[in-house]
Image 1 (cartoon, rainbow, N blue to C red):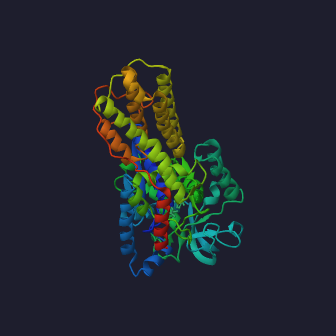
Image 2 (spheres, helix red, strand yellow):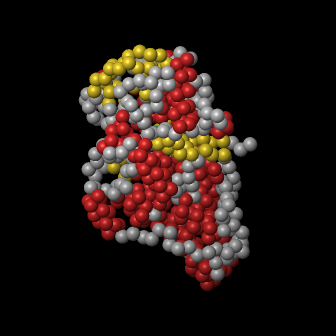
Image 3 (cartoon, helix red, strand yellow):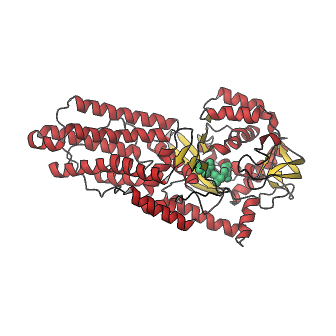
Length: 525
Ligand code: MSP
């Protein structure tokens, strides 16, 4: 049996204006899922939408639509965006799916029967847009620490989950399984900000929220949206349904990936619920940093005044899906935040995509055409440069693979681009155009190595930049491949005919594009 690999994105609040920020979490998960498939694993990649709560009901009524109608349209729209972004998920869960709703109710009842949920009353400071209760000490300047809006006093009869009894268990979990919560800095955040000040029992039902999953044995209450939402990771696999074969196969998840602001729900509440259900815990919670726009996270609940095109569809239309995937995957260093600016996007496009990658491919392919009529030549004797090249490429491939074990996507990509840089340097040093006139054998080896280098780099890059690498790999005739022996770079044999490819990333006039984008941004704002 193949090793399984279950990976999830958070489920998104439905919005037809998904920003580059939301796309980040999904694209990163898509790339990790694709990479693990190439490693030979049996991958299940889950994404979806978080559709309950006061906020959704409010927005739907502002649009003059029923919740369901409003949501259906948005869900279609977001599925369409994921398709444009070449995201290949295995399941899209909606928290309004009947199977999910039924399972959530069964789980709630089970937790109640087992004594983990009890009825009491709650009064506290509540942020309506974030649907979160806060304690006085958590507020920032008297406001919600997440969205900075005002909080209100709210009192209601409610059900509680005995979160407080899990504090020690959580501390033990972080200590005994340092791999559970990554990057490491997040552990300290959880312990210092939430566990040390004392974990309160969690209010898990609302009477004030109508658009939600009803508590099955007390219909005045709906289940707290965060509980409803977290359970998607189980219900999507059929947990508590007639067919739980996927659950049996894929649970526990290998990794739940999310932005750092929602790590506390996943690293505190989620494992506690799973412990109460006596289920195995996910192997890892990974909290990535934010893509910052002008110094702030772009969130849908915040106004942003930045005049930049942040609509992924517009950027994809103009520069192609790989350019957008590239900036997302490359710009956030491991565990920290990354800054997005139009200028950075365009210059990365020109320097990395057009120069380092695109140009290497077109130079190499056109030399192959010119000197060998497009047929990969036989490799002849190797000199020190060749040996070093092969060693260096193999080393980059190894580092890229290792980085992906830690979900360090940005580092993995930079190692893969180092392969292309090595290729460009190799061309400069070996000067094939000089070789052509006086050393045919050397020229054969150089082009053999270049095509193999490009093939290795494109295979490794394929989970990240799906379109352009496929064009190159199709041209080389490498359509089926995996990462089993990717470090041994020579797989293309002499005699293979390589097709021509179009220019992958036409060079941009950055100034002109900046003006174009700024005009679009102004029109849209
Ligand atoms: N519905 C909850 C998640 C429930 S999961 C059981 C939610 N949804 S969200 O739509 O607000 O956010 C989804 C993801 O988008 C989060 O991982 C969040 O961090 C990510 N991003 C939104 N803007 C972002 C950036 N600017 N940068 C990086 N990711 C950010 O939270």
